[in-house]
Length: 115
Image (cartoon, rainbow, N blue to C red; front, side, top):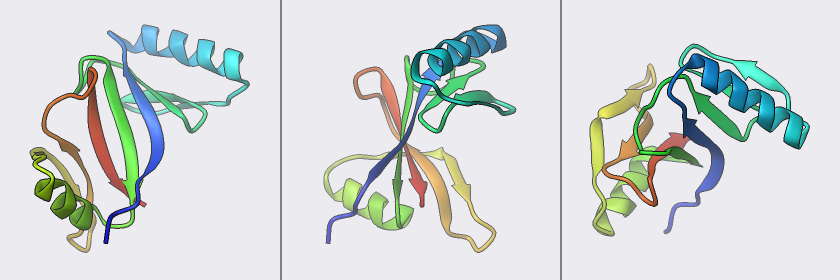
């Protein structure tokens, strides 16, 4: 059975907190979205995560949600993809919460999250 993925958000790398805030303000104004502040990033609605410093991916990351990160990993490994295990985060019950694939795709890292 193939995993179903849904787009969670697009993460956009910015050089610093000031530029992240500017981009959030622009995106919120442009698309009538509500801003939300975080520790490492600020959000423009649920769609755009503006990183306060560059992180994985030259341009940022694309966050995809799925029911089971473990099943997604198994399927993607069969397709020849690998994962950056240093980015793995776990829930209290030991299940994978999220992880990034190795490498970049069109200048973006791919972030797999549990629904």
